[in-house]
Image (tube, rainbow over all chains, first blue to last red; front, side):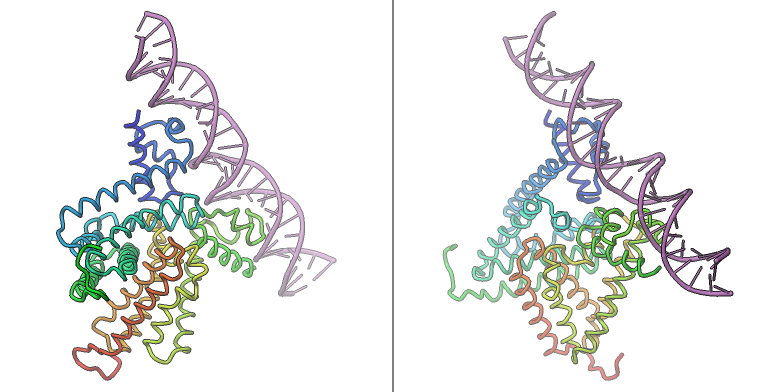
Length: 198
Length: 198
DNA sequence: GTCAGATTAGGACAATCGACCTAGAAAGTC
DNA sequence: GACTTTCTAGGTCGATTGTCCTAATCTGAC
């Protein structure tokens, strides 16, 4: 039954985030789902298979969230601000467990895990979306660089804020980032001014 | 004999960095040191005791490195640049394993490990040193904020660069950071100019 | 040379890991 | 109703985990 399968993925997702992939066992997932340990083999052959499904779920949820942001905000700069402020939105969990994308990618990197690149795709989904926003802001030449810069800001702030569990630091960094974004809005910086969205 | 003890700490340090704390076992450390597994108990009662010693060693090495930087660079801004460029200096390992400080802090956070705060002290050593440099630059009111900003930059860049294993991105972010630092040098920004180092 | 203390190797211990199997319950088809 | 497929519970498997013990070896003081 695939409602059980979905429940396994959801619980595994949460536990991988909160405890890390290595430190999470089948027994813990099973307990959280409320099924027996041995039942796993029918749904997922290996632990890596669960990880694969978790990453796929995260990719899906990320794409969905970004699409939702398109509807809520009018300007591309406003959409980028949505991303920047995600640290505040998810603060209660980031405070304890850091950024789910960065921490998983880091852990799999250390394990030299075959799914390392797959986990990195979540970053790429964010990056491509950000690139699209910066291009819409008239920053096509530096769009990629700016996108990665915003991602790095998000990662660094999450890591440090999680270490010190300090919210005020997050607010200051967000303010700094928003000011930087505003300075981009004011100076279109396009070598050739661009009408038409290409 | 305390040469063995030092060897254990050094090997454990390396393995904790490369594989993570959870994923590193006594057997692996023992094999790396070249001693038997059972011999550990004589030197360290528990795995946490080894972790404690590793963190202490890192604190010591960090303080030593920062002191060395004081000698090599004349201006405080130049010293901050030493820190910023550490991503390039240690690129070959950061590429594969990320920042040793951030990744350990993140992992211990997820484990809710008692030594979490101890690991975070390495950040604080860097922070205090950076604060001192910014104060010397005449940025006393914003010194703490600037220091944390530089730390966050370092963390974010390391995480993202390690995910994509892309050196050129590191270079661009370093360049961006150095320009920001230069803009600070030009505008002393002291609300009241300050002679006397307080 | 003797002897006490420090250091070591090798293994035992219970617990847990991911992986796997089997028997039976549940669900759906005809 | 009988029958097939899907799902589940419980348990076993060898390997590995951190911890701990003991007997042997090494070292240095006397």
